[in-house]
Length: 192
Image (cartoon, rainbow, N blue to C red; front, top):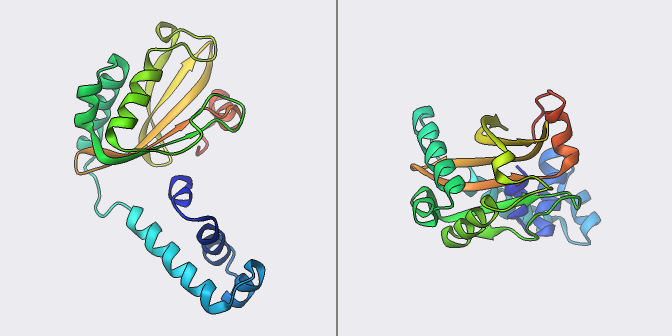
């Protein structure tokens, strides 16, 4: 959901959350934003269209998800940009969340070539004082999507989740925020 909300403009995001999550009326939302209720209704309509466009249009076969996950991990851990490009959708997006406490990209990265370069670049570098050889990669289900937990030194240092459609990865969320990872390290399974 965070990835979807980040694709909206700030006003669309505000209207979407106020309307869909909190149930505010268009007049109340318009007043809060300094717009008319008609304008708030139009912003809500656009926001819903953007959100709908980001939803998977079909269920992905679990076997296909496992296969794409395996190919993604093999290519990413091996630092193979060409193989990674075959797994990524052309318009793939990568969102990072360091919570201001861990190294992360400042903006959403869009496009297979840019995402492949980012992923292969970070896959060969030490992170938080740990060498890649000292890290453990374990597949996991994160927010209902296939993903990976990266552990080192007895703690989870990163979680990566992705969406699969048409046999390719369409969106990646890379979480390094220690506040979100701490419960996972403690053995509790909480959505990231």
